[in-house]
Length: 302
Image (cartoon, one colour):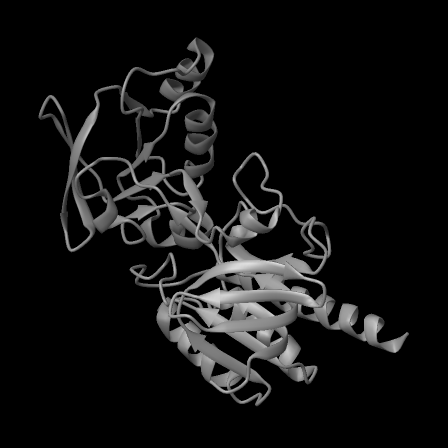
């Protein structure tokens, strides 16, 4: 790539980054998207709850989006990993793993998060297929099925209450001694939620589709779907290196205009939102692009 200086560099080229790039491309901005090609939903077979694209494969949505964004000739793509970000007087300098250096006046992180899986054999293989994080994204497809929730304490109680909207055939696996209160336990049992306190050994599955939960005492529980909220970390360490604040949930802290606490640095998509969905990623990316363009106009007009 001959061009090295841009109005905006976007780190992350999935739904949020592409949406921001479209906003900026339509505003005639010189934009570079740097993306390493490992979205967190890469093994999820279908995306849901995104109007006009309900049931489509995530990779198909992003491929179509990239083709459309590529029509805007001021938007450029770089396939690689950004490894260093430095704030300069005129903006930002980004270094890539292969040694290229790019500069821009503004920086947008649409870099997503990376899930940290428990040490349960088969968990990673089922993630996004039959082990699910969000009922709004996937609950309809497994409605009324035998379903398990892996959680403990207050979060387990609230999660079970939520999932009961989609199925009454529920069991709760605390994966160790329950920390539910006596009242929470009583309420769950009243709703016929079975509680299993034995530690989980593995998942028996076929190509990611769960068949049985196998506990360490070798007991088996048949299920068709599992909900789990796993810990996560920022997929990209560059925002923290620049001094961007991270909130108590581990998400990049932004204001209502998608701005971080570092002037000139913005963030959108999954790296900023507790509710992770394609629709929200697209929305926040599109808005961030418009905000960044307005900031550039304001700076240049005076």
